[in-house]
Length: 143
Length: 433
Image: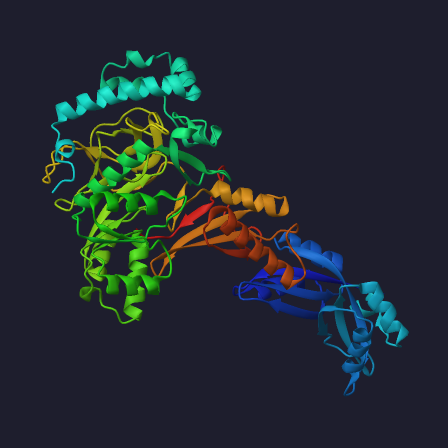
C-alpha cells in the first residue's frame, strides 16, 4: 500500500538539480514524480523513481545525502472538488499531512496525489474506508 | 602627561630592581599558597630563593590556559576566598570558563593601571567617559569603569548594545572619551550616519579600543569616521583585564606594558625559548604584584614583538607591537573568545555525532559575523524541512547559550567542506584587519 520515495538534501546553489537528474539519467532511472521543498539555504528534493535502490545507490556514490521515505499514492477523481473530498476525509480522521504533491501523469481518468502523513497506516485505512483508491508501488513506478 | 610620574618614568635600572624584588616576593607567595606552583617549581628543580636575577625567570615553567582549566574554578588562587572581592571569567577552550579572582588590593592596582592607561591615551580628570565595553563576567566594562573613576573622570556605564541610545547619549551627555571594541566603534559610526548624526559635531576626542585584533588601516578609518584619536589598549582577564598595556597618544607606536606590575617576555611558541628584541613571538607575562591569582610565565598565545627603545612620551616601560595573531586557534568574535573545539563539543552534544563543520568568520558592516556550516549526512538528514530548520535553530541557540556569540547555522551538502590531509580545516577567517 505504501510507496517508496527518495529524498535528497541539496544546497541552494546553481547546478544541483541538473547534477542529480544527470546522475539518474546516466543510470537509466526514470523519474515518475518529483517535488522540491526549499528554504533560502537548502532544499529537499523528493522523487518517485522506477528503481528506488539503484537511484539511492548512485546518488550516495556521488556524495549526496539520500533517505528513503514511505509515502502514499492516492487516486483522485479528475474533476472540480476531487481533491477537496479527499482532504475532507483526512480532516475528519484528524490525519495530518506533512506534505503532498501531484503526480505528473494521469492514471485512467484520475489524477494521482502523493502524500506524506504523520500516521501513514491510519491514513491508508481511513482513505480506503472512504472508497479512495491507493496505488501500489509497483504500479506507480511503472506508470 | 602621566598619572603616576614616579613609576611610569622610573629609570630602567630602578624599574628592573623593583621587578626582581616583586618577582621574588610573588614566587615565595605562590610556592607557599598554590599547590600547583609548588609542584611545578619542585618538578623544575628550582626554589623561589634561587631566582636572583631577572634572567632566572627563564628557568621557571610556563603556566597555560589548560593549567587554569585543570584548576577550575579556584585552584590557582593564592589568596583565601575571604580576601577575594571580585570574580571574573572568560571562555575556556571547552565548556568551562577561565576564572580569576581579585583581592581589594588587586582591584586598586587594576584601577590605577587603567587610570594610567586613560592618561596615556590623552584622557584626564574632567573627561566624560562613555564606556561601551560590556559589563559582567567579561573584564572590559568594570575594568575601564574603575579606572575612569580612579582618574576622577565622569564615567557613563552604558555597556554594549542599543546603538541608537548610545549615540543619543553621546550627543546629549557630551561624551569626550569612548571605550569599546574597534569594530563596534565603526558600527556606531554607520548607525550615526543613518540617523543623520555627524561625529564632527560630537565632543568625542579620544577612543580607546581593544578586546579584539585590529589594524593600522582600521585606525585610519575610525579616526576619520569618528573624528577622534584612536588608541589601542591590550589586556586579558587571566592577567588582569584591560589596561595591561596601552599606546601613548604622543607616539601611537607600540603599547607600553606596565612593567612595574608585569614582566613581559617574547618566546618562540614552538621551542619556548626567548626571541631577540624586536623579533615576533608569543607574549608571555608574569604578574608580580597580583594577590588573587598571580600567574608565572603565562602563555597569552598572542603574537607580538617587544622594544625597550625609549619613547618620546617619556615612559620608561617597554612597548609591545599591535597584536598580529594567535599561536593557537582561538578566534575573537565581537570581543568574545571562541575556540573551534568549543563549537565542536556543542555539535557533538546536539546529535551525539561528530559532524564535519566549518566556521566562517567575516565582518559585515563592521560587525563580526560567524557562520557555522554543518554537513548534513544521513544521521542528521530528515525528509521534512521543519526538522532541518529546527536543527539549524538549535545549533544557533546552543552556541549563543554556551558561548554568548550569535551565529548563523548553515546546513551544507556532504563533502562540500574541504578536507585536507591530517588536520581538518575548521576555520576560514575572511576579516580583513
